[in-house]
Amino acid sequence: MNREILEQAFDARFPTEMKDKLRNAFVAIAGLGGLGSNLAVMLARSGVGHIGMVDFDVVDVTNLNRQVYGIPHVGKYKTEALKEILDQINPYLDYQFRREKVTKENIRELFTGYPIVCEAFDQADQKAMLVQELLTGFPDTIVISGNGMAGFGDANDIRTRKMMRRLYVCGDEKTDIADGVGLMSPRVTLCAAHQANKVLQIILEEKGE
Amino acid sequence: MVTVNGEKKEIAGKNLYQYLKEEGFEMNRVVVERNLEIVPKEELERITIQEEDSIEVLRFVGGG
Image (tube, rainbow over all chains, first blue to last red; front, side, top):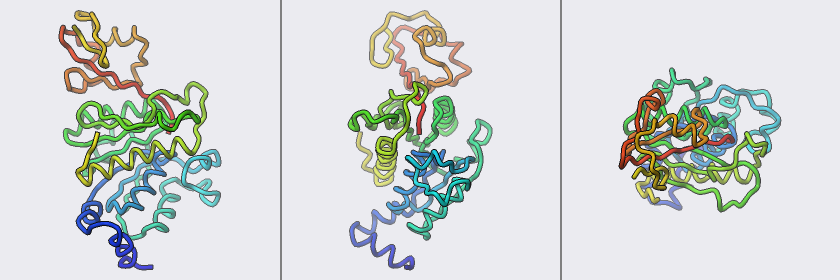
């Protein structure tokens, strides 16, 4: 399998200019858990050319119920495990991994150069911190955040909503792991898919609402 | 009249931070927009809500 074969497989279904737009896009993902790992796989499959990913954590066995990792990845850093997975899907894209915890102090350095940033953390205060800092510190960056996808409630409650000019919020905006509700693969993946689809719409300039 | 998340409220003159706390928002889990501008966290306590303000509060929940 080489680059040409993979690109032709893509070309067969989409116009070339669409492929080029995706290939030239830069998208960052903050957090490589249930949302972020699924998002990364979807963006790689879609041919998004430059994907920046940040996470400090290692794969735990409790992650396997909703994250893209498998048993061989348990104990590995998520950045390393996801690199293995993405390289099996498309090794010809530009993946940039940073094994770091995102803080107010390193946000500027981590996300400069990415006009689209996906927030994919799991803690509510961390989500709020990152979204706040990105919207105030980067005047043009579009932020796509995952907010509320716990449990197994109605799949149709997961939606994408535009807020505040440059922010898209995906999720049900209600279910909270703090209320003792667990996370399960379908709704987490649905939420990640909302985020990934919004990324594609923005790149392809059919933003929708 | 002040608009908060689409609802009309008579809250002009109140402190924005205090108002949101009274409404039950956990302040480290929200992002607040006032008149189409994001309000930096450290400024929330200095803002008095004005008549005709339009305020949007995004409340984050955990899970990801």
